[in-house]
Length: 535
DNA sequence: TTAGGGTTTG
Image (cartoon, rainbow, N blue to C red; front, side, top):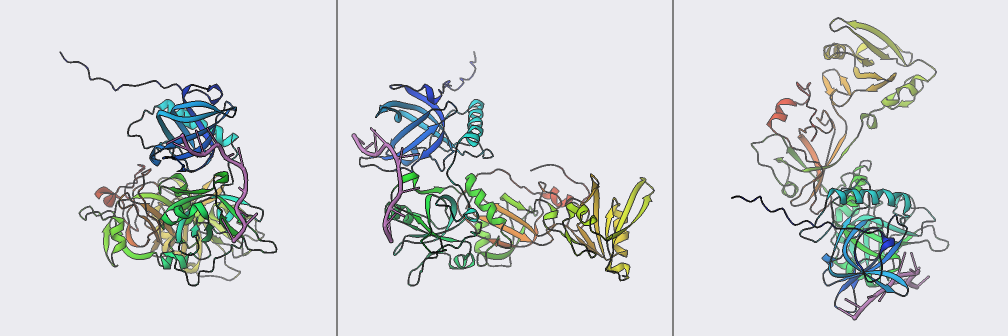
């Protein structure tokens, strides 16, 4: 006789709304963090953390959580995070209900952002998490977005003259903790207001001197005080941080704003260390990748050749790539964190010689509004299949130009026609018509053909993260041979590689390449078969 | 046991 395998014991947890908790009960609750303080040592034997939860029942519940181990306290990074508490004991303190962690207490924490993954932060080795839980988290996020007033989660570029306090997600670029208690941080955006810089003559900054120098103008100095000193001293350069309740002080008569993290824990003042793969860290990384020309600060770059298609070459860890002297060739496997541009129109602009306007290709009609006609259209039919084709020949400034120096927009033409036109005209820009607008083709088509040179792609930035050793790398190059977003990559050029951060990450998207990719995708030609498979 | 949110004064 064979018995069916025992299914794991499953308890059906009941979660009650915050307005139904009563003194003396031990409850399971979900809630959105309205306020919290980072755990600090108590005068007893434990760490403790205080927080306030809210939920759509319109109640709020203050909680005090103790633990000898930081891991067992909820890992909250910002107001709006969602928590699930099991076995929270409800008691009364000064007439208010209060939650404390009783025996068997456990916590899951979720990022509050709508678009973040529903992966709990927890030290629990096993926990139950069902589709119902997932649904609750999503609902609470939506509710919080509409109903919860979070503190200013501005970026450096958003700081205004009247901004007084700020919660900042940033990366630690450097620190000085022997004389001052100084954190030099950046978030990938440029502060528009003048920020006070600490005079560091005679002090030694802990950090990469080249990076500090190349990011001058983007980084800001934050002075920290008193109880934050020990935290500041233990921070690793390169770590992602959330600085809670920075005071932006504008001394009277001064135009220069000072950034202070004062002593005490009022309003949750303190420092959180974020994992490099947290939603907020990634946001920080993205902002940095969007900096004009600043994706790869000088001094953090080395130059190597990266191969992803040659399967007979063993894959090399990004950390090893960075530690070796160029020129070398490697194959890598890594997680794609970010890419730019999202559309060709972000990189290619057309110039109208008639009115001297610059047009973004996706907005070609705006050029058509200029007083003088800026192109002349010639149309013809292909035979098989029968199809209307057009060449919009861009007119020069009154002067007659030889065809080989003319630029044309080729609409609806075949590959054969493109070849033919490219032999006759100086520049051929393949376009198509969508909703009566001329737009550029996608990345599978060259954006411009100059004689024998078929230019695919544009200045292209790819940001990778690798689990081990958890290094983030940005690739940037001209004429990147990529045909489609979200398809397979064939990297076989020289890229600038910069060490941008450290810390292990979790995968959202993996780019895998293989021999088939190499067969299907060749550089500079037309792909024989276009794979629509997403990765 | 501990602490129990509500701005430094550099």
